[in-house]
Amino acid sequence: MTALVIYSLCTLTCLVCVVLLFRGYRQSGSHLLFWSALCFLGLTAANVLLVLDRIVYPQVDLYPLRLVAALAAFLLMIVGLVWEKD
Image 1 (cartoon, one colour):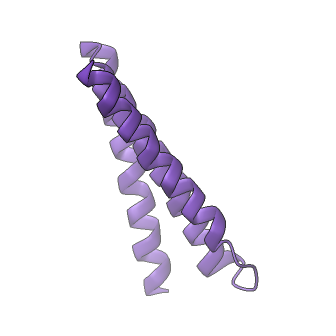
Image 2: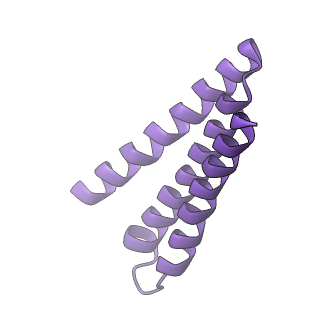
Image 3: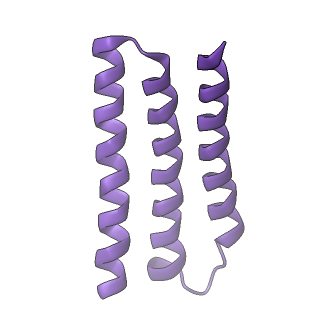
């Protein structure tokens, strides 16, 4: 039960970050906010997969999918940082 609460709060926190970053991007037009929002969207997906892996379907190993989602999220952030530098 405690794990479900913690995982859910982490997922909710990432989702709130996505909303706030997209809202900031719409207001300012800063591309770095856009890439950051995409990164947090990927981290939200990784957290959802964590809940599914540990709580909903403990018999199924979703660890590789979680890693791919987190890697994709961080790659989006790196692309955004490199793009913004140019």
